[in-house]
Image (cartoon, rainbow, N blue to C red; front, side, top):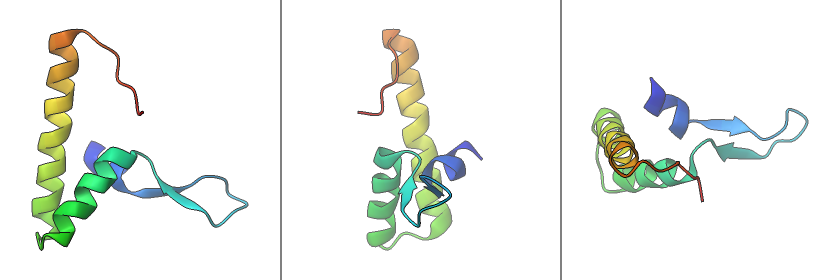
Length: 68
């Protein structure tokens, strides 16, 4: 569920039609996996694993997550 929320698009403001992903890095990774020809669920699992690796690295290094 968390992965679906991070890769889906959201509107920046309700008054504009500009659509941006919630997490640009994870969305780029997801798009790359889809372009490689992976099915939706395989790409989603790859994103979940990527997110778990990020969380483990943050906990191991005791650092803050930054979107930059």
